[in-house]
Length: 305
Picture 1 (cartoon, rainbow, N blue to C red):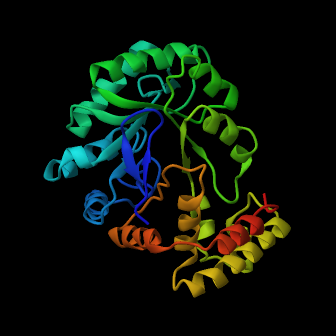
Picture 2: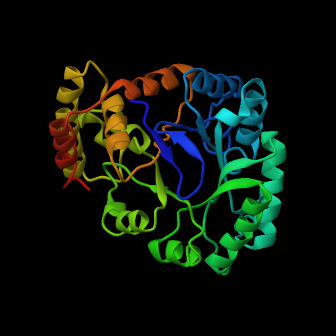
């Protein structure tokens, strides 16, 4: 599958599979990370044909951006889509969407990324006081100046997205969505489609639960689910496992392929701690699910949430 997607109403174009980089330099999020692995992961992704790298200031308080900035010096920048996010003020540990803070955040991210433009810039989290359309208008000034190419918001409620998009300036939304977390399908997806706004899900593999490596006996590792609900999830994954066997693929690869065939999803960005995990994810690009298998997976998870 080599389908390309256009981001919102911009000229930013991406492949359907990208790389999430919270495990690249994200020492404040995960334990035991090594920078050399982070460098290897980003390099492997680019070498494997992945063009979109999704990062954020909060991934290592800028360290993820620095690693990406180092690696991309050896590649054709024009062929890469760099997405980053900001909203957290590390000086006071508060979320800030003010125009001044966002403009400062973009300038600082550009330095860490060692580039003169960011393809997609997201407001990472909403604050409580800044009018969202005002925040987006500030980003639009940066878009006009060439510092960013597409405007995004992340972790915004539907009402906040509507406020942010008052002037029709939002190009892309990133939020929690997976086969185990499907709230977005009810109201968010219809709004995004109507307004030609792209969508990127984070946690597409539900923190590893959708990789297929867990069994009923692992329920205590996922305390957020009751034993009965966890059992339902495992039963659904067994259906996917049978489909994956026919495609000579893993459960994770088939689920990533399902996202890439979902018309509501623009880019899927699974993370990786090691370069070999990137290789495994890239193989999902070769899977084209039949309409029947796509529907079977869809229906298998319809009632598990």
